[in-house]
Image (cartoon, rainbow, N blue to C red):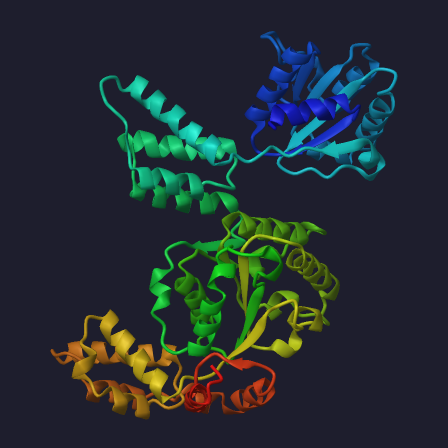
Length: 508
């Protein structure tokens, strides 16, 4: 099946009004030109700058029909059947005269078939004509079509640069076609063309650049942020229970197996600065898949209905990028109900729950929250999300590992430091606090003309109040709530003893 075939079926179905939301305007005009030639029916194209013109052959436009009302009156009065493409007509749909003219043209279709095709980046049909309209979406290119685009652009480059041969890495071509899935044909061709013309080759470096450009195309409003190279996130201390849970579900998270039992997502609850964001990144790093961050601040729009539309586009982007991790940071800021924007929050929640309930791609939600009590019960109940993990402050063993990681990242040998002493002396510190102690110790040592030591790091720790002291009341309340309601993300000593006892008893 092709776009041309689908359009022909729509036109033969006697639909008087077609709505096409797309940025691929030239491609749409070309499709209708080919369709007009195939069917032997006239097709016209209107713009506010040029007026009305035939699309099957070159000819001067009717500039006296450049105003929207004038062209609609002309179409209503004409006795010639045909297809009329009205480009960027959306600003004129608020005019009741234009809406009435569209309705009368559509209602007169049985007597004289004139099909109006509204083409724009965003379209909402007036209520009066929705029952007379149908929507059409251009197909996104599949892998075979993307391979054809690569061949076409490579051949064009070779013809333009006579005497030079095109080079292509087979793995790079395979990755490129896979990574460009979900992009429109026009954008895919442009990205491929840029990669080919840069050096006459398709390389793994081209794949990385094209993929970054694709992310920007999919979310130009900034609602979704992307982090494609997530390997660095895998080196995270602690979180053993969370890591084990993810590893057991690796196949389902990567899109393998039955979609019915595919993991939906998890909630990470914890104190501010306790490492929830790092845990969300660690999930993507462990699986080696892209991390998408949903920004609720950029999501909300002052115009009615736009916020929900922004969310639907963001979720559609996640589906196109799957398998991926969709990170919703501090989700209560976007979905908490009971405030001044309760109605909007309810609509946003409904949009999200509908997406979660429908069969979908391997886009895995990782939501983080500081105040889970503010979230609606519909979201946190079992069946919506698979599990709630509590990210507590790191214990002694995890703090020891955190020190080792941050020392290695800065080219320092952890064996030269008393890690046990540092871990014992940093009780109540978060991972971020430990990192800052290492950073401050490096600056202090450099000022003295040396390298950091256990003593310099210990001095920096002593100058800082740990989070467990600064937020002792909030942490105690959060721990009390999480006990019995959540699963600990970090493995405690008690967990380890229980695991040994279960193995000895033959339970696991």
